[in-house]
Length: 370
Image (cartoon, rainbow, N blue to C red):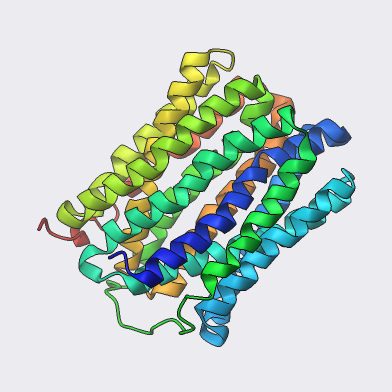
């Protein structure tokens, strides 16, 4: 499974995502503390994820035209170079422009990396291969999210911005060893209707990523940044571990069986955030949310790959990922003034819970236990 191409692809993805996660919570905080306020913080994340979504729509065409190597290099450049402009000014227009470019880079990296994983791993071990990839790309969030918040407070924003610019650019070295091939076109099981097979998992995943966008943007603002850093670290650890374990289970017993437990864990974890000032509830809740998020990352993606062509499935899944995160951050920023944090978090938990009926969609087509 861990071929040279797989290792290089994971290294390039990790470099890009480390640069991304260093700034994911840091840039909204930078904007908020520089006069843009909570709405400005939500707008920064919303613009970032909007650009990501728009780029993801174009990635299948880019891969078919340019191949994996060139597209991955383009994504890393867009993640790295614009971050080096942030020390120049905290003005919201510049921050939004940088976020727009970096969002496009993120969209390219995540779609290309996920699609290449599906190409490099055999169908019989695809769920586990996706789990291994999930662990690798989860490491940047484990390190980057809390490190970015801590370093911006201890060292200032500028060193964080410089590091977030240089690390993705270093990832271009790994890209040089990737195959220059284009996505392989192959027939996959789609069931009676492409949209019916993909819609349920995509909607479930969009709901939980909406919650993720809220948590990573507003948890540092709801309480203390130190508590948020610990909670986000807990979530960042449990997510890749759960994603890997879900892959091993899915290959043996079917990924569809994991949807309901994942939804319940994610909803319960967000519900615990109602106790904004309680360290145990906040940290434990984010650890539980991270476990549900990791399970759903693997289960929804594996189910969708069973029913569609890899580059298009990767684009749709990542579209659900990033559209949900952007909508969550922007939407929560708009309603926060009317609800406050506890009631707002309760609404987010309810949004996840209402997708529970979708966990039974097409269960009959789940793989039989091996």
